[in-house]
Length: 94
Length: 249
Image 1: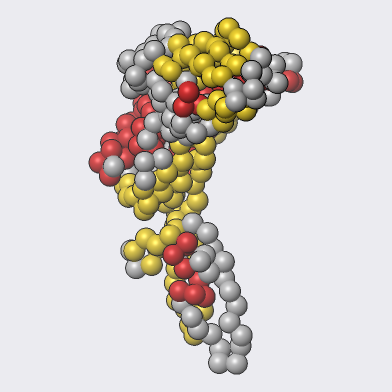
Image 2: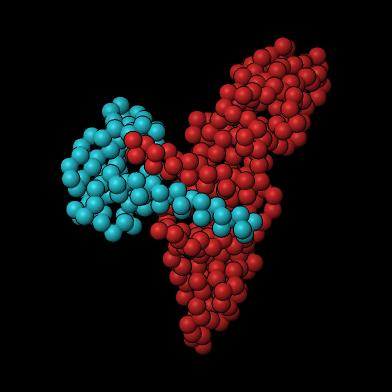
């Protein structure tokens, strides 16, 4: 997973996350939007055949209270915890 | 943020299961579904060396067919990417070569089904080949897709609102999936997917239960259903951990 920041201000961040697709990006976006200080979070991917930018670009806009990069890190932790709690719950039922 | 997830099995066999998950967001449910399809690695034949092929089909065609045979996938940690297992096949006509004729060099990697026909051989035709398997993800080729069917639907809650008016004909009301009636989970196949069979003469209202999804997962035999679900969750966890570490740098 290679990260490349394409745009960065105090309350806005655009970052390319190489090698990922909708599977992970949409979960990550969903986790970001659950965060209180996030004003907007979205990602854009283009199909392989389009020729241009094909890696997903995640854009985060915060309400100013938090650094977007920190919010991204928290979201990653959230996704990790979601995955482990899901697996634990599933294994408990199985 | 720690969510409470609740998982409950509705139907379950070795290769197919239906289970309810409560408390997940639609994004996460879809992440699990997509990960099961494309991100859980399975074993499949990738390279074939033909010793003799006097059948009516080209080597390439048979190689594709061999590749599509589901193989059992060894437990996590037994194999890493680039490890190979060799299977061999030697069938002489008149006979049909089946996946069960494949002889594996490793007990952990076997054809999941013995009855997949590969080719019908006539008199004096013979197929002899060696095949190497690789561990890859479904994203790269459909032969590495462990889940042949993976999907989810909202759990639906049934509410009896009224009786059907006396002089009105009863209408069938078709619903597919799993319904919840007083906390009881009922697959719609139990009443032929028609609510008017289960609640005759009643007027019914249906609503989606928020954040409750009934998954239906069927595997190709590479591994049991439980395995593919947990491995899918693991791939998402692995990517989240990777992102977390990449961001910290």
